[in-house]
Length: 145
Length: 145
Length: 73
Length: 73
Image (cartoon, rainbow over all chains, first blue to last red; front, side, top):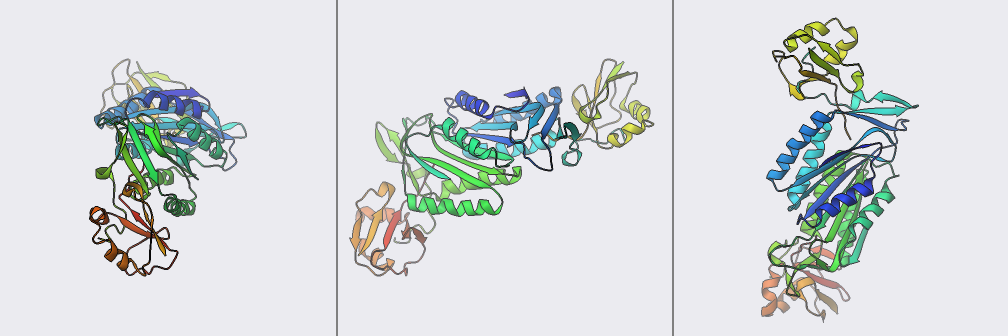
């Protein structure tokens, strides 16, 4: 399940809802990863653009991978502005098996950072500044150069 | 922080409380691992004995390890009976850095399974049956044989 | 006409172009001084699938997206 | 007297014994048929620290704990 929200995520509502949807399905492990915006380098928050068609297909590919191992993935992400100390990103995995769940939360979050078509901006003095140095070029980058 | 509870854990109360205690401390990642009792092989639940003095020192050793990398660990575990589809175990890590958090949640949970002085029983027809086959001998086992 | 989308920080209006392959698009962009530095780091999707070859054929009504480096989360 | 604790599924009352090392304890337990199969898989802690040597000295008031295989979570 993939959900996009305008502005910061309501962490408790989302993680509790997911837990309650999954608790009776006989999974043995539930691991949410909650990303929280850090107050650093004078930013007041972050802001995000998302390209949904490719995000959806990227997510579905991972969901298929999880399904093959009996696991299930959930993800929430913010669009637009997200102030410091609030959350912009939650990913979670449920699995009957602990080791499968631990492996998926690591691999899924790492691939998310490298592949999900989401652009991050620092909010500085009310302006959006593209976080270019922290961003990762996608596969095939430079094709038109 | 280590907390022990009689009976099943109140997952929402615990994970929300931890999140709210940590959200303003400028950690970038919060990862709780929630263990849920699976309905399998005719059990009605699990039951646990805990030896607190060694659990506490084991946990403190891990907390020191986490501190060196700027991370912080939290853990809750049940004593006594825990019915199917409820939680007996929650571990969590917070860290400024995603990769440190992902590594700690994996290594901490795995060492917990191998080293924490907790004994598990299946609840079958109202009786406690020691889960011997699923248990792991501690370091130095067999010294007195 | 194929549609070109400039995503995220590229922050440009979409355009419609008459091309038959990505090679044509590369040729078209080569004098766009503002775009040149972005082209080195942008990936390209045709109809929402990333592509790796300039020989990729482009049909009328295809959607071509330029994707700058990403950083979700 | 040192105190011996039988933890978890060992499910026995603690006892007090007069010994000077874990070797003495091993000797004491060797005819306890009920305990023998457990001793192969139990770890031993002295004053809540796991130990690996039978030569470990035992003082009066020490606490010795027998810990069967564990499975938290």
